[in-house]
Length: 421
Image (cartoon, rainbow, N blue to C red; front, side, top):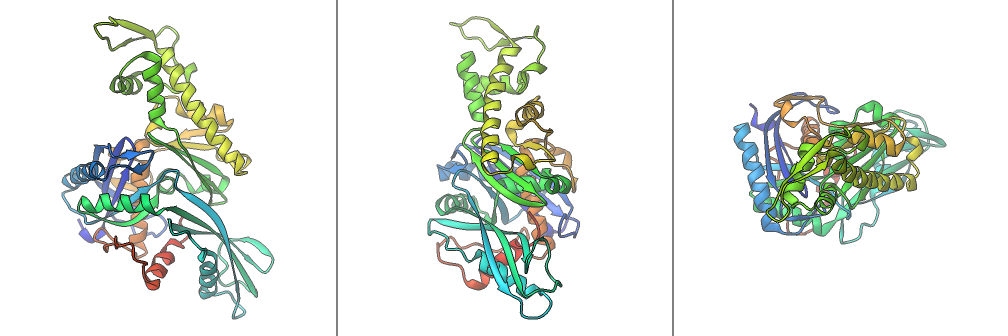
């Protein structure tokens, strides 16, 4: 094992904190192969709807998940790639124009146009985490992916800028640092999930990634190979569990167990004659219900979440551009029937996505929808390593709140500008 080629991903979800340690074994910058070495999980108690609400509790969850992953991997890491999501995420499109110095467009011309596009005034309470070029225009020729070497006098770039709230970002970094680790980079969770579950063809044709977590559901739309829209719906698996609690008169823990053992997200899939036994109390006595009733409760709430996502994507103008359909992932997507229900609601093809491609080692231990984000974070880290931008050792990120130097920013932006999302 080469310690310099280790990468670690950390997904702090509203229900579970998951850590993965992997070794980068392939050098392809676009899709480096990673061997999964260690996986760790812990219950999360310090998060509310994707945002750190209790630093000490979050620190405890991170420490346990990371230590379990390190024990399994037989190696320690110092730096990790952490996922961040939540309603504080905002995205916008920005344009940049540069005049071409020579006859041919050079990399320097492209860098100048990109620099103009990302030189947006970001409010003080926000932080820019991703600057992703969408496409270029040379003179009046639009939709160009790589303009280097083309002839023209005017180069225009369209860039997708993703910002997050400074406060949630700082609290997340602080919790990680209190656990004894450093955040190499914060990566938006739906983008990380997209790396691990979407195919190049799906991104090209047009696909909507629906990442169902416990507290929130994140949405990412790709079309013509690029990220086009990001959004968040403030409902997730916890809302489904709450409905089971109220609908069946059971405790939170029993509702989770019932969901995992007998749950189904698509009511028509359940046999009418099937009966399940509910956990009993002295006052209630023995109780039985048709399994169909449990499926009905899950179906209704999940369907409502999908409808909110659909409205969101429709409002953004991409609902008719999803030729590759919908991919549902995240912990709450593990229910049988989720793909069928998504297909029903969106009126298009749908599948449940889980990591699988470009993985070696203990790959079978992360082949479930709940591991999509954390595996994507490791793959993002592997990509950065392949282009020489960082490793499991990494460099410490300043927590002082001081403005990073221009050189530091330029270096970070240069790597973000890779054709990755």
